[in-house]
Structures are given as structure tokens and as C-alpha cells.
Length: 356
Image (cartoon, rainbow, N blue to C red; front, side, top):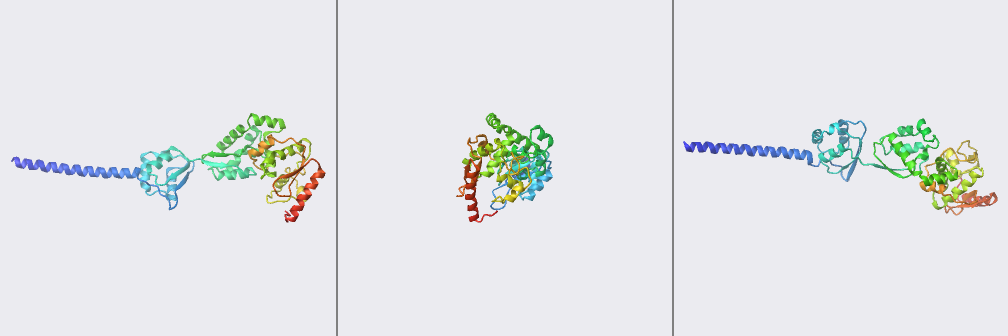
């Protein structure tokens, strides 16, 4: 009888042990499966690609994010990503932006990144840009906002009036530095940032110098843009050129600047301005009209702006590119000397067959 009881007890222990072992094994499988879903690498790129960026547009939903990830074949297991996203409530916390995706990220890392909104900024530099349309087009390559949206906010009548700009000189708001923006920066936020940078740039020292020259900020930028285009090689000569143009302005002379005429003609491949070009009827034709043109002919560099604000004090009112093609100019205080300089340069152009 006691032997039977011991047998039954032993069998029960075995059964319980087997159940426990099976339970532990099953639990282990569940834990391992959960661990894999959460922490196993679930991002992979094509061969040779070490990093990727994804762009989640404003007002995107979870399905849009899934479509984006699938489009770029970034997920090894889409279902596991969906499961973790649901458990971490990412499906209700979609944040737009530009995100850096590292190779071999797991679902937990990826979802934490996207849910946090820790996007990677873009760097934008303004250089060699002539018009607002060109600026807007360039910015739209780095931002979610398109060129039409960007253009619209900068030519808004109320904004222009409140900040003493107009459609011709608004380009002077862009101070050429390298800026960091978030990809989903709106056109309005962009404009606010540019206005802050503009006000910061025009500090007390620069404001005082502009006032001494009797020029507004936009007029300084306009003259600086001319100086920039007249001298884009030898920066050390810019303050001398600025002084020359200021002399002509103060003496009531026409600026007679080739770069302004080229801007008026909208033919930026011209290497040699001809007399027939000078007949074009445009406010940017400084051979025809006195004073500064209506606005900058490009976004001038800070170097050119400061060259105007620190213009050399001299008596030159004429200049002509040097015939040695050094990038420098011959300067003159009278027309007779200027003609001599001009003839030397024209002979060089003819010799090299530079006719246009």
C-alpha cells in the first residue's frame, strides 16, 4: 500500500516536473521571441550602404511610415516593427522630420528615435544666388516646404511693409552663412529665422557705418552685390571698388557697372558687354539710370558687405579690368586715363577672340 502511494507520489512529481520544464521552455521561447521582436537588429541596407535618411512628411500617419520604410526596403521583419510600435504607442505619436537611420538598428532603437522626434538637421549655405526665386528653389531642395510656399511668405505685402523691404530688395534679408534647419521647418518659421539672423547681423557697429555712408541696409547690400560681381576673385580689392562706386554716387554720376547691365539682360554667359547692350531699358541698367539699382543683383557675401561698410577713401571714379588677366583692375581719377586703360583691355580681348 505504502509502495503504491510512493509510486503515485513519484509519478505526480514527474508530471509536475515535466509540466514545469515544458512551461519554462515555453516561457523561454516566448521571452526569446519577445526579445527578438524588440532587440534583434531589424534594419538593413543594400550592400555598400552604411547609412540612410528617411523623411516623414507633416500630417503622416502610421500607415504612411510603414509604406515609407517598405518603399526603401529598410525592415527585415515588418510585422515585428508593427507589433513593437503598437506596444510603445508609436502609432499615435508620429512626428515628421528627417531621421538618420543606422545600419542594424533594432525595433526598439528605431521606434524610440522616431517617437522622440530627434531628427537630423540639414545644412544650407547661400552662395552664388541672384534672385528670390533661386533662393526659394535652393531651399526647397533641403526643406519640406516647396519653392512656391517659400516665395509666398517672403513677398507677403504686410511682411514687406512692416520690415521696410520690397519685392526688389527682399533678397537682402538672406545673410550668406551656413545654417542648420530641421527638414520640416515651415516657410513661416524659415522667414522668422532669416529675420532674426538679419537683425543680428546688422549690429550697432554695422548700423553706425551704414548711417555714416548715408545708405540703408538694403542699399548697402545692393552696392555690395555689385562689388561682389565686379570682383569675385581678388577679395582684397573689394573695398577699393566700393570706394569708387561711393564716389560716383556722391558726385551724382551713373555707376556704369557691367554686372548690373548683365543682370538687366538676364544673360549670365556674357563675358564682354557691347554698346548695344547699354540701350536696354531697365532700372538695373546703370549706364542709363543714375544711382543704385532697385535691389541686389545677387546675395552678396559678408566680405563684400563689410567691404562697402569699410570702403577705401580715395578719388578714383573709373576702373577697368587689367589686361594681364590677374583679376585686378586699373583705376583712374579722370576719363583720359580711363580710356587708355580701357583700350589696353580691349586689345587683349580682341587678341584672345573674346567677342561676347
